Figure 1 (cartoon, rainbow, N blue to C red):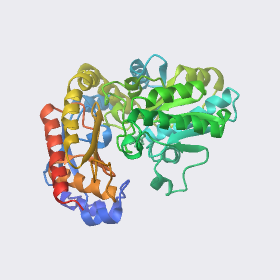
Figure 2: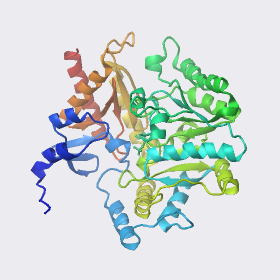
Figure 3: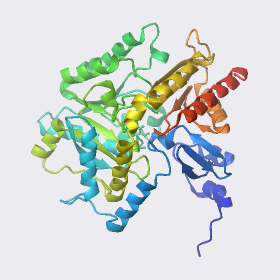
Amino acid sequence: MNKPVAHSNLGAIDAAHHLHPFSDMKKLNADGTRIIHRAEGVNIWDQNGKKYLDAFAGLWCVNVGYGRNEIAEAAYRQMQELPYYNTFFGTTTPPTTLLAQKIASHAGPTLNHVFFTNSGSEASDTWFRMARVYWKVLGHETKTQVIARKNAYHGSTVAGASLGGMQWMHEQGNLPIPGIHHIGQPYWYAEGGDLSPEEFGLKVARELEAKIDELGEENVAAFVAEPIQGAGGVIVPPETYWPEISRICKARNILLVSDEVICGFGRLGSWFGHQHYGYEPDLAPVAKGLSSGYLPIGGVIVSDRVADVMIGELGDFYHGYTYSGHPVCAAAALENIRIIEEEGLVERVRDDIGPYFTEAWRSLADHEMVGEAVNVGLMGAVQITADKATRRRFEKPDDIGTLVRNQCVANGVILRATGDRMLASPPLVISRSEVDQTVETLRNALDWLKDNRP
Ligand code: PLP
């Protein structure tokens, strides 16, 4: 017989049965998990009724904010009409097809096709195969190697984690798989030495050219990068970086893949990150803000260059997921994009709340414990430093970030720590006073660190 589950027992039940992603389960079970019950706007509430301002939009994804009944209703209507049908073997559903058109309408003139997945990780696996297939069909059988970046994050599947540049992920599961190579990241603060940010941006971009030379141009299929490296610490590249990367990919005839899973759907004040930086990718994986996280859906936006080969010359692409383009997820995503359009959220980030956030967030740069405070639109990082003048970092960067993050959470604001960088990525609907609250809470946590530094 099923026993009723009392809410007061959830912590114990969770400890007994639920294995969490990216969590030290022994520690989590000892500390107790925070159970989130409900949410509205930019706020979430836990099991004790405590309210938090979620300045991280869940996991970089709740772009339109919580509590949008329109999305729930669109999903409900679609579930009643057609809860599921597949897109294999010559069929589609109305919201799936309309969503592909809608995404293409915002993605730039040469990006007109979409292959649907359920997540960003699956989008990584999808473009990885697609890039290799593309070159094979064109007769370039050896063009299989892919270049990615250290400290990048492209998901947790085997290809996603291999493409990512997190060594501690590679150590679990014998990764990366063969054929993936990692070059440096444009992290000027930590790795730029005496170079100016502009000089450093060019230097790390040219690591791509050196790697292509080492591997042989005839062996390289693609280069992948996030417009702004997200999980790696919101690494905002110097202005010189992307033009040089784009030039090299064109000159050396390799596909440029822009991982838009975080930067897509308005976060930088543009529909996509590549538009902010002014380059045109050949493939662009998306997820997260596509549905604002209301239902799981992702995809790869495919350029005409690649699609022409896939459509015109390949025949079957033996790849896909039972839920590729799931009609209910697609209906939710369409409604989410309608909200972004009708409320002008991209323009709001570009012209209004983004500039306001920029001024407030960057004011933290004057704090004794802060090395740099950077952002584009509503994606920001504060670098904690042990010594402002020399850019020296604390010996145990992870501990420092965790200490500051815990202070913020205790004071009702959710921010994320990656090592010694504090990251913000709030819903695009955040108000000015909520921005002030976020920055003030972080400033207080940094004051606390100053008085309690290890
Ligand atoms: N790519 C980037 C840039 C991401 O930030 C993430 C997730 O954080 C992914 C891919 C993987 O997406 P998912 O967690 O939906 O599989």
